[in-house]
Image: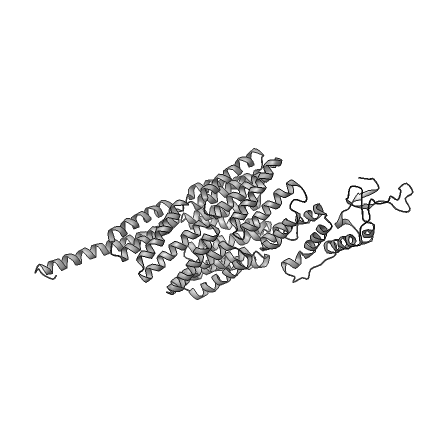
Length: 536
């Protein structure tokens, strides 16, 4: 760098200095240091002056970055419009490094980087456009980040094959340039997307690789994240005790390195595991700790997640009104911070709570709002879940044909995006609903397909639910022995897992035994009458 120039810092530039900006011999935007009164400095000729077009873009970038003030009631996008406009003007100048630096600007009051804040708000299309604009223009190390970001925009829109492709590209570059942190992150992302596809064993393999690298490079936070993700995968496999072991390790690391946000997340995951084990009071204790930490550090996203978890725990206790209060608080925060996916999740939980209270029309309104948000932000998996819940609500209303329509739509989306767990759930719901029309052959076909999926992807909770419904099917067909066999199998799985469905299976078993005993008594009485014996 010529001593007569300094590298341009756009946010430190004054309006009076704008006309002096030029290009140096290396093609960098610079600001001359000369002053007419400083005799010891020469007045160097710039390597190249800016064209009229270039001056216009530079001036616009300066104004948007330094002088733009959004209105107090501005939308989320308007709040960051200054950054976005400056980014595009810098790209027009082919100032790729400066443009990309804007993506990493930390915003007030969230302290999130711009590109991550757009993700939280659900502006995946806008986020994707930013990454594409600078991809391949700055450095290989930045490309690792941009490709992972592109993968995230696809992931949150349930475009899983595309997400995997971007994550694999990011992984390849990270390995090529020896970026251990980038390699670890890409492996973690791949684990998360395979988790969302219901391929939990594959997810675990990626998280194990992530864990090994994180430990090798001494990335304690990354190590904790990998352990937490492995816990999530084992949780979805129904291995709750094993999940707890991983979440406890994650918690220990978070506390050791002072990662309060990570500590809260680990506590929340532990609460979810204990909830699934039926230890609801213990789950609530963990979620309350998670909530306290989130409020202490001003983590609004963590606060709304904790409130949602508390709502789910009280739901499990059958305290639906309390659950609704927590979900409403979750919803309010999600709307306040613009977390569209979180807003949809809160509406989903509210709908489920109203369904359990028998307020089916109210539940339907919540699920319809969730569906609208999912479609708006392109969250296909969320869209499928909302459709399935609408099917469940109409089932509860006795509107079985309408329920089938929604379950069929959920099934189509699950198959389209490769969501095997969602596919299994939709098939199971279809099978259960078809029983209401005594379409036993179709019901059995759907239930058997759901059972096959549950076993392939190793989701024992779904397996138990499907086998329980198969017991009901055989009960309706009058085959009580086969119904009891299915019921015992479902009961065994549910008891081993320690999940609430075990109670339903036990009640169904008692009902079947009662029918079997009653049926035997009636048959003996009929035979006795036929033989000329006493009727009583």
